[in-house]
Image 1 (cartoon, rainbow, N blue to C red):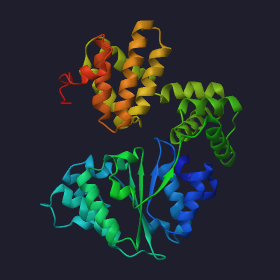
Image 2 (cartoon, rainbow, N blue to C red):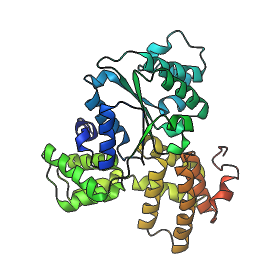
Image 3 (tube, one colour):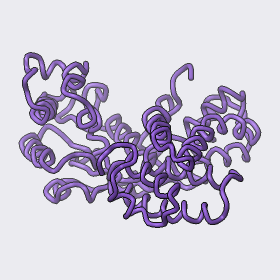
Image 4 (cartoon, rainbow, N blue to C red):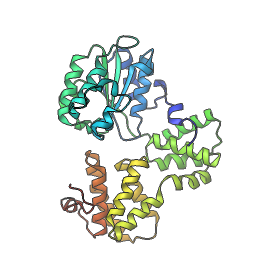
Length: 353
């Protein structure tokens, strides 16, 4: 997609956050800087809300908002961390440093630098449910040491994964998934600013297909506008049928039923890595595609939904997305109704549970 993304161009200001309780609590944090836990499901606007807070709080938000995605550390090798332009200045000459020490150094150095404007800066730790407990203990010590000059915002879909000492030092801000009407309102505002033609049915289709993921809805609306020239029911349906990766999901389902779990897992990996899905989002799309097709009978679909319920619980607990989705397909193809039993058998794709 050429041109700037709408999620960046039309990032909300603090007053444009439509969830009143969250907006009021963020507004309070402007006047009384405090550590925050911003919690909510994927696509609810946690990162966008933090950026809006930083723009309101700092005269130079580009310099005084430091964003660290936890996946930048825990999902990467030491070499990838050391050569990342954002971190290499902190890690020069420290090639033998353990990964945990590298992470601690980047965090400590980020927190210790003086703010460029005002009296404090903001450090955003995104996707914080992936932070190991030992690193959380180190984070707690950094928060205590630099509490006068650094505000920490911890964004997570699962605050229960945070240790009690961190939760007790942070003011909670809850963002729920936006309703379809709220999503339509956002899309309508953006389309008016972009001078894009639209109708009510087109916006409702885009908003409903996003399933409460505002980020996904905005990207889908932009793709539809670029590909179709307008956002109507027809252009949205034609465009999002391709964007939604329905064919790839159908291929994964078919491969699983044929016993080719290696191919099924490869497709899942592609969708998670390149398709922009998280585990719960891909699970929802898999069920939608299975229901929409005619390849599977009622018993098959009933078992798939039963297994999906168990997988959804495991995914919300922050466990491995790929592993649980692979076991879901394996259990479904084998005629099982119990995902727990399948999960404790050896992974058919070669991974250990």
